Amino acid sequence: MNDGYSDVLGNIASSEPTPGGGSVAALTLAHAHALALMVSRLTSGREKWKDGHNAAEIVISSSEKGMKLAQDLAWEDAAAFNRVMDAYRMPKDSDSEKEARKESIKSATIGAAMSPMAIVEESLSLIGSITELAKFGNSNALTDLFSSAELARTAAVIASLNVRINLDSVSKHDSEELSSRLSIFIDEVNSEYMTISDIISERLGW
Image (cartoon, rainbow, N blue to C red; front, side, top):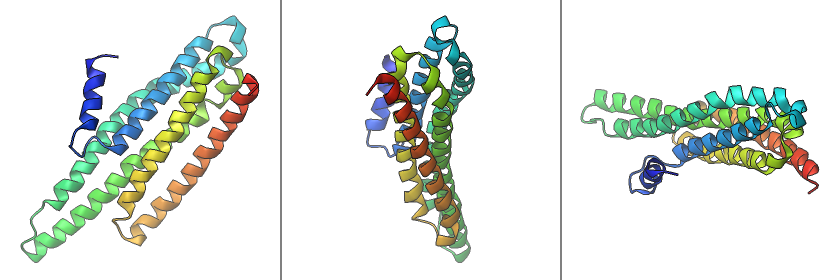
């Protein structure tokens, strides 16, 4: 832990609307990747866990990129919200200005929904990537891997809230496809999570 970490928490805790829930979801996902990487590195190259070497290397390859992407998504979510606020501040004195403002709000709001949607997708990707590691990874670090899966699922749930609140502000036509995709992703996240939960619980004898 360092001052930079405290600064991030302080920014979240401030009265400013960003960074908010979507950014927190992305940072939660970054922590999930970090734990997955730790377990992978405690498995990779160790003879006792040779059956998990391939799974560990796959997770290392994907989560090194995923952790960076999750941090980028935290920034993007805040930026997307700020674009919505900027659209609402546009002038509306004439009919043309009103129409331009309306279209900008619509576009920015859909963009603000797409940003947390990407976090949901990335959360699903992480959970799917650690299933084999759950089967064959270092058993001394299984609770850390379980925590990774729990954090990824939590990130998906938090992000889904931010998708939904933005979709509530656009037309039904604009929101239907995204709502359908979101439901599918969340169902898949929960399914993958339960698979990992069952695997790890069995290995731990819980």
